[in-house]
Length: 368
Image (spheres, rainbow, N blue to C red):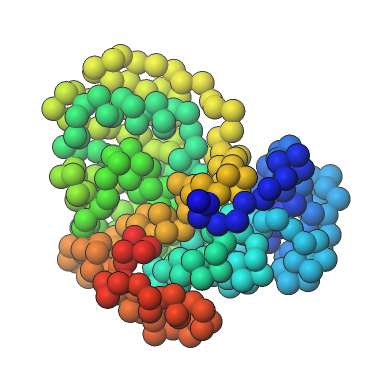
């Protein structure tokens, strides 16, 4: 039985409305228009001129509106792609879901774990798919690295080093925790994927180097305990000019059977099975997320990025932030339980509240 309604006509592309036409929005529009599986039929953005310019830039025949609601009526889409800023994710996602339209949303699902839990309940109540695009899961080299890590037995230690110096401008420069909240979730999510295990707790320290151009902390070290006993250590800086790592970071796993590394690009090396240069897959990054989303809508199968499965990646981020703020180790399950109770205290649609109240007393068995 399908987890949600399927789009039953495989002979036609899925009609898609995109919300958000900024720089990342333009990248998504190019991906959508390049795909034979979807048709971009509408773009919503508060800046209509920007949206119209983006539509022209990609050569699409798409309606433009200031609101999602108007486009839902005018285009009757099969799906929505949400590329708004994180603070707007919940509002857009919930509007689409309760209009009966599934959503593929840029990460993170929400600025807070409680808002993400609300979205889990909204997707369940609406009976529609909400998938979060963890685009950096979609690398052929990462899949190969996962196979190499499995050769080692249960790793005792998995590490990521991430050092980049991007100058974005805009909202990232003003965030309190730009590295953890906007970028580290990719590595945290990949750690879950590589280990096939779940995080239990974390101890984290963050700081802002004196030369940093960010207002908030742009450097961090976090040590997670996973339920298989592995320690996962993430060390990174987002104001690190020179000798930069890949956007995926540099990875090392060590277990009883040896060591495996990934340079974050195409090079995977193992003391067990040697080195390999892995060519790119057919669809990687956001194109890979789109491919999985379309397949889920065609088959009704739950994708790896379904909101309920993504919550623990976001929980890793919030737990790391809480640990940095408090100077203490934070337990992931306790944080999820707290987020559940916070979600219950927020104003939400009655259908969402009913779904939240139907969950177990711990509140995290459904989303976690």
